[in-house]
Amino acid sequence: MAASLSATSNSPWNIRQNADINVTPFVDVMLVLLIIFMVALPVSTVSVNVDLPQSNASAAPSQPVIVTLTLDGRVYVGDRATTLDGLPAAAAAALGSSDRKQRIYLRADEGVRYGALMGLMNTLRRAGYGNLGLVGEEF
Image (tube, rainbow, N blue to C red; front, top):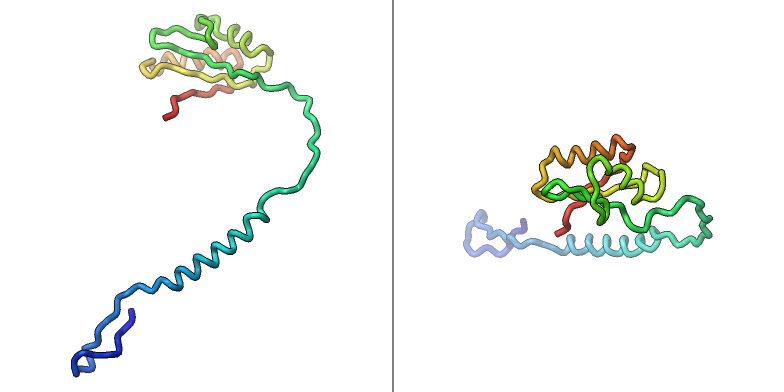
């Protein structure tokens, strides 16, 4: 805190205090940091051009496979209805390959019992589909 040197009374102990905040050092530090980041940002980007080799891996499916469980217990793979027992075969047909590592997305109505959704997931896991994802509504 700063002190004012001009006292209003004759007492040497009665010194008025100046409680203003000095923001000049803060502004100086912020400007220095701004300049440092402005100089460092272009250096951190990658600007090296390379010719990437072509991959011979199979392409991912254009449409993701979505399994839906409705409130009344019906199971759909995409837009096609199926049963819980026929779910692995319908998922394999929707994936179009025997690759069981592709992701399958699961959707369920908000009111579906947790046990019913777990039963659906266990059916897919027993069939070898372990890469499952849950879909929620974005807000």
